[in-house]
Structure formats: C-alpha cells, structure tokens
Image (cartoon, rainbow, N blue to C red; front, side, top):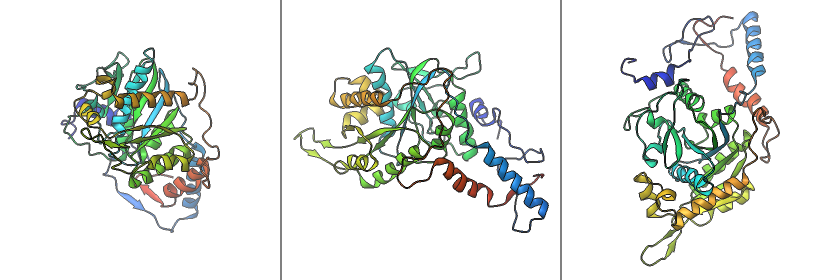
Length: 367
C-alpha cells in the first residue's frame, strides 16, 4: 500500500507523525486492539487514572502560533454545503487584491475531502519545494494558492480517518512557504468539525465570514457555524447572503428562489452585520466552472461589484494585524453567546468527559 502512495501523500500522512502506546511500542493505525475497562479498577489503577486526568487538564488549549509571513487570516465558512462558500472565498480573495493592488493575498483550501480551489482558480500540478523543504503555493490571477487538490489526482477520493486529515491540515498550515502576505483567505469545509476547531486553536484568526443562502434549512446550520466561532473566540465579521435573488435575463422579473432576507433576519438574531448580497446569476456559475472567477474576468459586472463591496466591508471590520512578537489574546474569556459557558468550561465539562470517562486503553499502555 505504501508503495502505491505518492510522495506527497506520504509526506502529509507520515511526515513527523508517529503513534505510540504508553509503553513505547508502535501502535498501527486501525490495527491495535482496544481494551475497554469496566469499573473493576484497583486502587493503583484508579490513582493512575486521576494522574492521567490531571496531566490532560494541565495541558490546556494548544498555543496559537501565527503562520510565518501572514499578517491576517480570514476564514470563510458555512454550516451547510452547497451554499457557494468556495465561490465566495475565491472572489473574496480576488476582491481584496483588486481593491488594493499593494496588498498580497493568498488562498488556502482546507477542504480535504472536496477541494474546489484548483478548478476555480484554473490551477494544476504539484507544488515545488523550497530550500527549506516547504511547499511553494501555485500562483494565478495574482493570488497564491494551496490546496489538497494539488497533491492528489483530480478524481481520486480522499478516504481518510480523522487523524490523517488532521495531519494533512497541519502540513497545509505549517509547511507552506507563503512569503509575505497581507491577507490569507481560508476556504473551510462545511460544518463545525475537527478542521474548523483545529484551525481556530492553532493559528490566530483575524475574523470569520459566514456564507448562507436565505433558505431556512441553510440558516439553521449557519447559526451553528457562527456560534462555534464565537465559542472559540474568533471574531465573526458578518454574514454573506448568497443566491439572494434571481433576475430573469429576458423579462427582468426578480424571484427569491431560496426565500427573501433570511440571512438578514439571522444577522439580527446574532447581532451581526450583513456584509452583502450576492445574486443567483448564471455568469457566476459559468465563470467559476471555467476557472475564470467573475471578479477577474468580468470586473465591471454587477455581480463582480457585489464581491468587491463585500471585500471592502471585510477589510473595514478587521482588527489591526498582530505585530511581530505579539502574543494572541487569551481564549478563555466568557463567551458572548447568551446563556453559554466559557470555552474553558466547555473544554473541562465537555471534551474531557468524552475523552476520559470511557476508560479506554490501547494494548501496551503502562502506568
């Protein structure tokens, strides 16, 4: 199986990652036997478990470390797939560069299972390695891009478990030579899972943008996405209402196919701003599919201008970039979400309960 793997896959999965049991023996992924212990613990075992709990709690949250050379990170997210998040991320990155030509902009695609950036940005090929053994982003339309799609075949499915995905995300965050960037736009997968949590814990994020259609079923998940970022103390810059209205190209009649102003109502509920509305238009879909995003190929169109306005609103809401040597602020403050516990409490009462209460030990664990 290892022989069949390409060098990039081996780099992503096994570069510096080893899994060991407590006794020092290697634990093969998916191959170790798991012993589930009941309540029959001796006094020594019980004491060892208490010490293990204390060790885990003392570690706290991972320390955030900025990406070398990157001043500000903007995360584009959505609770649900199919709402136009990747299209928005691409045109937002292009809009940031178009609004201020002095700014250097990068685009990072961390949707491991369904990378879209290579096709939308009309890019193919493997990244080169720098002298420091870091991957160099591919460049098009003035935007530096990195994606899992550059490391695998276009039609090859990524059938990985969580640990493998997290290893790949770590490489995409830490083993890319971005050079100096003013803005790095991160296109995240749908949902509120491991990828979003890992990114928000490991790098300082200047702000998150939530993309949703006005449809009720999409808004429910958009609400969850906004709350997740607030819980991990990432500023939510606002909501983008995508596919807000369709205008017939012949009779000019306007139809709200997915409902009217649903995202605006959600923004009011969450006390957030609407960054802008993007219409449902054939040109946006066609230019994305052909790898010529509308902000680049049709900059004078109404649709491109909508993205440019959104890019300006995003910049206006960004906090000042961290200076070299600055330490990211604490993340254990009380959450701003009404009725919710602080993130420290969530970690203590939620994650640790899940991790520790099932007394699971891999074979070879030694006290």
